[in-house]
Length: 263
Image (cartoon, rainbow, N blue to C red; front, side, top):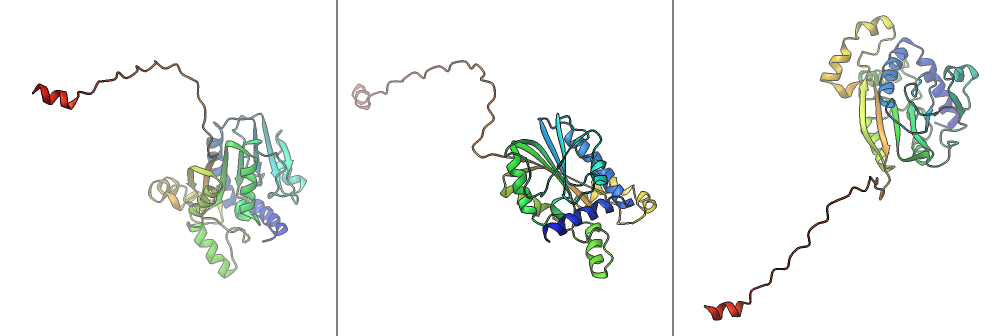
């Protein structure tokens, strides 16, 4: 997939997110992202792609940006406006931010529709400060939706955008580990079967609780929370006053010959 095709596929995802199934995904992801980002502190945060999801709505950092592709239209960008600063990235593989300048980066469904997902992650690792945080949203291939998508490609009736190359959770964690981005938490959701109408999706709303309890790793969508770890760096805390330790007293050794003579 070249860069132009990647951008077109991301826009196709934006259109899919307006469907009943897309609204179902957006509602779950918005609730989960609000909970995850509310207590992440710092100064600079960026959401890359998918302006229909306001991933930083609950975050309280003073500087928040929305990065979009160069093919995004003014209408698509206006979805994310809402008084928030917007930065249009020419290419997700070359982010226009200084190294170690961001405290938080959110990637909602970017890696699976990117031409070079590894390069996107390398760029994110570059711009994150030490102990900076990354949140990734993706479709789970090990789910009913993933099976439906595979069958749809054979029958030419795909359920999700066809250009996406969905990444499994273990594979994604391996990628993150190679870049010293340690995954700390993961969340799965959207357990309803892959219906196209809101009526049928709502009828199966009861499976959310059952899925979380009985088959938690088979949700159609996952969210991974990772932290940038820097080798050799230790967080220095306050220098607490400690009581001076007592010097050990020397104990003279008894001469073995003297002991034998006394006997």
